[in-house]
Amino acid sequence: MKFEFSPHIAFQVKDYDKAKKFYEEVLGMETVKTSEKETHFKKGDMNFYMENSDSGFTFFEFKAEDIKAAKEVLEKEGCKVTQVYSDKSIMFADPYGMRFHVWED
Image (tube, rainbow, N blue to C red):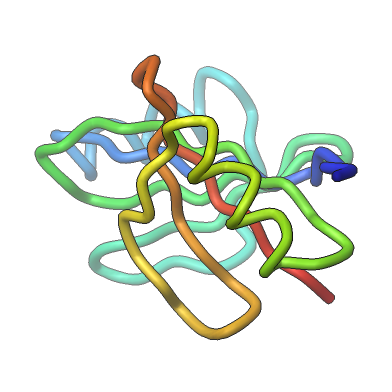
């Protein structure tokens, strides 16, 4: 099973307004789109999606050629599905604490 890293990272923050200001003004991230609960930033070739949440998780994104095969491999290795967006888009938590999104074109 081949997992390809994608140029998208999502993360959750506890103080959304202050965090937004920090990422724009201090780190120089460009705001692509924003709402009350989520902001899409861009810095170089990377896309960052900041979400207002008390959880504070960071999510990497991986593209897979076959999402069903990817799910099978990941679950066999101890990963848990945390959310299903569609039949081609699933969120996982691995047994080591990382959370990530796997999707298929």
